[in-house]
Amino acid sequence: LADYQRLFQADKQPHRLRQLREIALHAMRFFKQFDARLVGSVLNGTAHEHSTVSLHLFTETPHEVGLFLEQENIPFDMLEHHFRLFADAPPVSYPVYRFLAGETVIDVTIFPLKGLRQAPRSPVDGKPMQRAALPVLEKLLEGSS
Image (cartoon, rainbow, N blue to C red; front, top):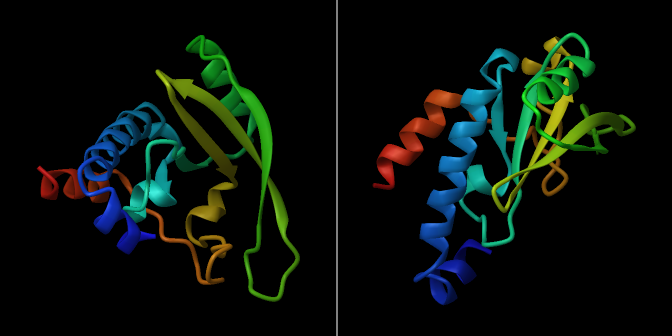
């Protein structure tokens, strides 16, 4: 996908990726109390014009995030994502809050506090998912100026 984007979307994709990373930066700061981590195509650089900003949040109870969004008057939908924690383990369901930031969809998947130390397996390659904390994203944005 990255090769295709370099060949056929070199004029648009880097700009959109930067926009999505800036949106992710604002969202991560907004959710700072939940130790937000960026995951997915916005982190790995393959995001495109229709990509979703995906964050992992960590809290004692998923309802804390819902209450936080309600207090901030942010309408959201509830979903579930299924992740494997170990290669041979069955998938586990995690709650997801989905909302819009302008025209960009943001998905925040809620993990227990101990989930910060163990990334779920990537559905693509089965390895632990790459996750980035706020300082990592800030460096990515500095490097793409």
